[in-house]
Length: 364
Ligand SMILES: Nc1ncnc2c1ncn2[C@@H]1O[C@H](COP(=O)(O)OP(=O)(O)OP(=O)(O)O)[C@@H](O)[C@H]1O
Ligand SMILES: [Mg+2]
Image (tube, rainbow, N blue to C red):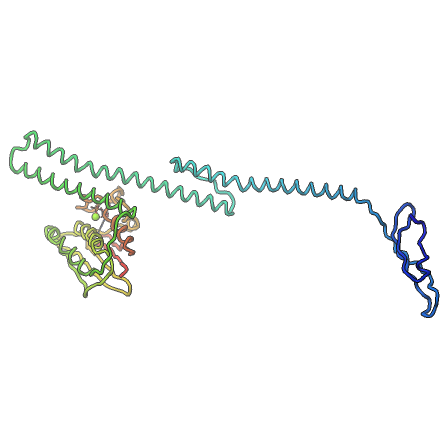
């Protein structure tokens, strides 16, 4: 290593570069020739030495950088593990709870912590589990109602059949009465079974709609005619008011089933001397049907539940209006399913003591 700046090139007029050692430290230098005057013939060395430590020892720096990088990587890994745990724990909880639900434990719930997406997930899961739990409770209630409803007529039929068999009913009137009860109870059973099947089919969408061009006004008149005799026996009138034909592309048999169910209920609740009114109208794209009765009405708190299967029969504090005991409590549930299947809407307006109106809107 040179100890002195090499000035020879400078004196010859060119720049000189190199390294020199000063106090054991290596410096790079550049020496540039300068002239005092433009015309001076010899350059004067103004040895501009740009000292810069050369040959830096990278090893200690490299070691420190590597150490820092290693530490940073370790910290990042630690943070990732902690974060992953924080994210995974709620998801694992939801996963464990869904396994419990899948095994039938519908009481399984997940604790909701924080207010992020994971809390939303937990809330959503709890909501779903609660809805399933409620559906199962209703299902069980429905099943026990149906079995109860099935057992009642069967017990009556069996009792009368046994009485007839044993010869306990000697007189003609007694036998006729027994046969009448057996007949009505059999009809009740038949209707109940048909209702349950209907509801199961409609609920699973396992039934067919046959859409065709129909006149809803005609359907209303036919439904009224079908119930006039029964209504007359109770001194109830059925009035149909439609201005003209109500053309509608729908399944008229299902519409008849809907109206029939509503009229049956209306006939049962209407007091003697009362009139049930069926009316129909059209608005662009829709056909509406109203079935009104002057019966006892439905209490406001029960109105939202009136389409639930057997709901009103379970409300202990609200006894069914006189004459309604013959039903199975499925009619309105079937009505709502059918209306929805036809793409329509159904509403009920009721004033306790003054009567009830069911209003249906079907897409024309
Ligand atoms: N027009 C009405 N006025 C007052 N209460 C009604 C009326 N329609 C229905 N309800 C009440 O709602 C209950 C349920 O009616 P829904 O038609 O579903 O069953 P149901 O008539 O008892 O039996 P089903 O129709 O299956 O033979 C009835 O038992 C009755 O208590
Ligand atoms: Mg009914």
